[in-house]
Amino acid sequence: MADLAPATGAILRAILDSTYDIWCEGLTPAAYERYYRGQLATAWGARHLQRFALVDGSELLASAKQYTFSAMLDREQVSAVGIGAVFTQPAHRGRGRAREIVERLLERAAGAGADLTLLFSEIGADYYARLGFETIPVSTLTLRVIESVRHGAPATLVRGGDDRDLTDIAAMGELRARPSRFHLNRDRDLVQYAISKKRLLAGLGRPGLREVRFFVAEEGASAVAYVLITVDASGQWTLEECGDRDPAGARVGAILQALVARDAAEARPSISAWLPHGFCPPQVRTVEERPSAELMMVHPISARARAALPLRAEDVLYWHSDVF
Image (cartoon, rainbow, N blue to C red; front, side, top):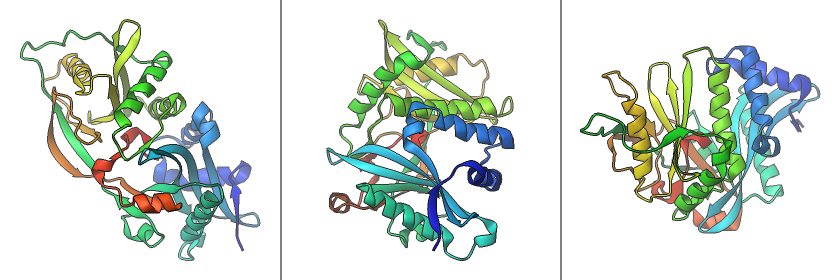
């Protein structure tokens, strides 16, 4: 029987080499390894991210990442495990190795007392449905910023965000998430991890491949709203996450107006986003809604998680920056 073991040393190097072509995101092989090790070097990643290998002796059969999260489900704290980057070595495909490593990680999660497991499928729902996963509908919105008729930036103090803002950002997120039936507990370390991951990916890539924009609106000495945006080589914006002490999100809208106004180009960007149900800043309009390409799925483990399913789109708050 194959063994499930933490991926370290030569096994980890073999995993990175074999998964490079699929998940390199335009990075060089050396940068791809630095990207993964950089995530592990964050406070959250060091405690909550681990790679596992399915091995037969010294032979690598399959691999996957495991993430551990604290979450809220129907106002009760639960333990969630994320499974990502499931990969079978080419020589061992067609023998059920991917299924085996997922099942072994599910057993491991259950043994650790987890309530549920999450994953994001790139291959549709059918395969993971056979393993007991259920789809959570998620929509990707295309947004446009409504610009001021005065053709200038709004009178909002906007500056670059940094680590001093993370506690305020976590507090904004906790307040926004309360009405949702399911959401991650995004403490300061998880927020920092999400931002660091985007910055690592941009910084390790070639110039112009992608850019990260992290801005806050400030009142007094505190951040009262923020946006985290990634911009790809074509100029497409993704609003990875945002927050605002104002329930209507007017400061988030003002930040977006300020960022658009500083660009002298006539063409205005479309912005892709996952937004909480019922939330859209007044300075923004939705021009399209479509099912997300990242298919979110959940596998209940505990009795209380099984009783809570299914989860509808409006039940869940999950930011695009937390996709794994």
